[in-house]
Image 1: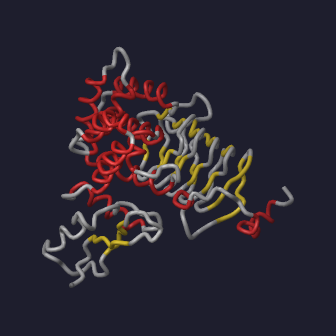
Image 2 (image 1 turned 180 degrees about the horizontal axis):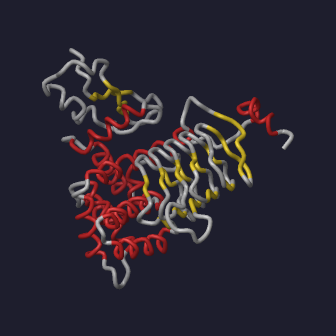
Length: 343
């Protein structure tokens, strides 16, 4: 077959006993044209099993796959969610009504997610039926959200060992649910419906213990591991592929107005209980150790530790958000840590 530069999938057998996964790659020649003959190459049901975002893929491949899924004739993550829900309903009949109402009665991931979120966020004056209509209107008409909810689901599946199935993120993990609720509030905020967005923010904080201002800018492929105690301020920016643990604060430093919150580069890993304050930059691929207080810029691909945080090492080859390695082994950083031995 002639190379055409289109996005294709490669099936990989998992000899550990799990289902085969798809691996995203780009065909070697991007210069030749296929005239559309390969448009459905990655849409085949037999191949498009878990193709969207694979840990270790190049970012170029990941971005290409992200664009492709919204227009794909198939939706492998939604197919996986339905298959998992059917299996779980058979294993736990007591949950069959819940799984049918939450997943199996819907025709797409967006409508299922709208149902789940609305029933989590409803209160006596903000009814689930009203929220479902609002959430469906936002998600069914916004391709960015259609893409992000799938890339986020893949991030949870890849990076959180406690998330064994895609359906678990949708149904049970409040980190995922709070993140998608924020995404809806963010769209409403940008549409000028700020009062409704703030009402949702308040309710999200009450239900999930996650407080993200609807004006904050958050990329895709995000993991909020646990989520409890997470605070992200109004002018904060979080890049793609970032992982944030519980208790993280991206806050300001006082009563100043304007751009006053941190900017987190793509691929960064922010450890549990880390506090990052002010309009400062955490570089691409950086790691902030658990419990650290960050008050000044952190270089790309570095590790910052302590209160106040200091850089103790560098790691250029891989993004910590994807590996989820939180440790600072001495042999790993020794060549840099020596510089700080006299501090």
